[in-house]
Length: 232
Image (tube, helix red, strand yellow):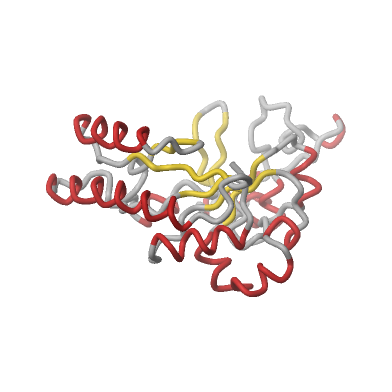
């Protein structure tokens, strides 16, 4: 799902996103609550109008808020799918008592989110299943959440706790036939060979065959530095 954290895509226009056939984009509740702020969102008529996106929007709960504040902000954003505020802890936490506490709190917070939701007829509130890696806690949470009969269900707590250095490693890489190239590595600064000589995509295809003919050196130059890199 494309992420437009602050109602703005990085390196891509909404027209280009429409051309891909994308029907759903994500905005961040917390950031939009800070800027442009709830008053502006109410005045303009929500985030669809703010960013010129006429298809579906999904917002996260925002975190660091109360259930009531989270839902109030998401109501102002006007997203088509809104998320309950849940209690999130690291996936790999060894603290079973804390995992159980987070699951039970998430159920209680769902009830508060349902009560605070102003527009259930046009905004779909999704519950979020918690319980860490404990299958029994997950079963208990599922039973409680399903009983609330929300329009949708999200699976939570399976991607939290990623270390920052591991997160950063996922960027600036090219997946090629030989494996993964870390194009931020200095060894590619003067490598003027194609990214993947066996690939026929627009980036790798030579210019005399209608492609862009981009080299590893050029990709090294723009990776994580220039917004044009988001197009390639």
